[in-house]
Length: 151
Image (cartoon, rainbow, N blue to C red; front, side):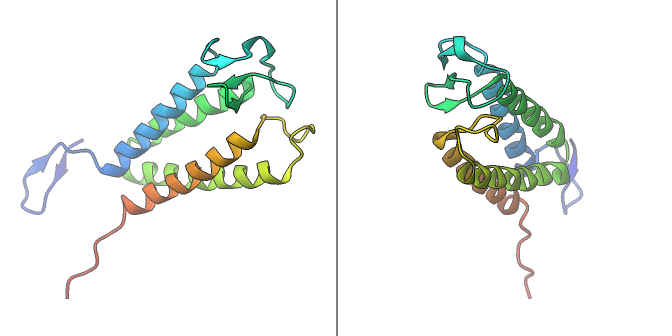
């Protein structure tokens, strides 16, 4: 991408929010792939399509299922696609962060042993979702903040 500076010269620097969205998207793609790799995902033989019965855990900590891994892959691909523009990257980070905060709240209120836990989620997932939600929103806002007008 070519940007024009105030002096009229052109640069090829990528906007920081685009880089952040691309990095977040790439991490989600990687996490989605890692969830399908035995050894990185413990108890891989118990991996279910969906539901709390899936005993598979990414890095031995985060409960995953096939659906959970596919959601990570889709969310990552969306981030990579939206990172092509500043507005898309900002929207991905802020809206995606909001989705993760809602998912955190959902994980707090549902019974982890019920059918409502279809993704599935455990306590480690819940706290990671809080961190991701706040971090993504902070990135989206901080990296697109306009400097105060000088008077």
